[in-house]
Length: 332
Ligand SMILES: CC(C)(COP(=O)(O)OP(=O)(O)OC[C@H]1O[C@@H](n2cnc3c(N)ncnc32)[C@H](O)[C@@H]1OP(=O)(O)O)[C@@H](O)C(=O)NCCC(=O)NCCS
Image (cartoon, rainbow, N blue to C red):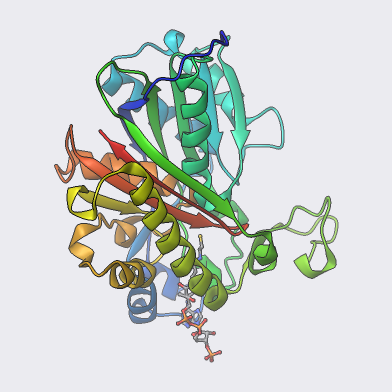
């Protein structure tokens, strides 16, 4: 990378995603825990989720999504000078998942690091990548959201295991003269809510975080109802602010792509925005919550289904453990 002081608008020039072949339906889950398709579908909108195979890792899925994004952008891996991976399920604490992906792609020399903001992670990474490229410190950034959440789920806990899925999504960022690209971003967090959604690794746990004993598996913990309430308020506030800062009106937004956690959260936000859910792209029914992968996977599907096209303005909005939230307005 080559630090300079340019301030340039940054565009998404390629989008890709990868979802594992292995599918877990609500009917499959009925055989694992005391739940039902009716409960899951009515409470969350989820019908099925993709689950990584034993030979798949966060980095292998991330690399597949990245390769797809690079191909669509017409960019060679050797041209990438920055790789940021948003994940809360890295292959290992270090080397960073970004380094494994860099190796897989053949982008040696590019700066590479991971970033964690749970389910808001991709939006945080997008903003960090934007800062590098808009100042000229990087020319071509690869921003990836990738998760193998299935490895941190307690498959006997019906409160959490029915909600999540695995996958990866990626975008390529560059300055393109004359294109507005990323128009505005709002990031935030409220650490007072660290207790209601967390994944303890046991290294530095507060007692309230149920640290696992040595040798015990590491699982995600969540107070669903509390997360729901904070998520709706935080996402609505972030989306409203991002829209205001973008200088666009809601009518000028072609599509809203929210973090795909739960259909009821999306409906509650639509309600607060006084618009129908038809303004939102929703694929939670097929993927469940894929955490940091959720928004780039949804963006890729929205493009391939013709729901958004070049020139369209999109409002992204996410929330996650932390609690964190993020929203951005982007013109493709
Ligand atoms: C998790 C969530 C779907 C639960 O829905 P809810 O309507 O709040 O349900 P409750 O937690 O009040 O539980 C109601 C009952 O369903 C039960 N239940 C929980 N999970 C169940 C499941 N998979 N199948 C059947 N019953 C289930 C509970 O045990 C409870 O039973 P009880 O009344 O006998 O105690 C909802 O709170 C939610 O979407 N929260 C946000 C979660 C989220 O998005 N997390 C990710 C953030 S990035």
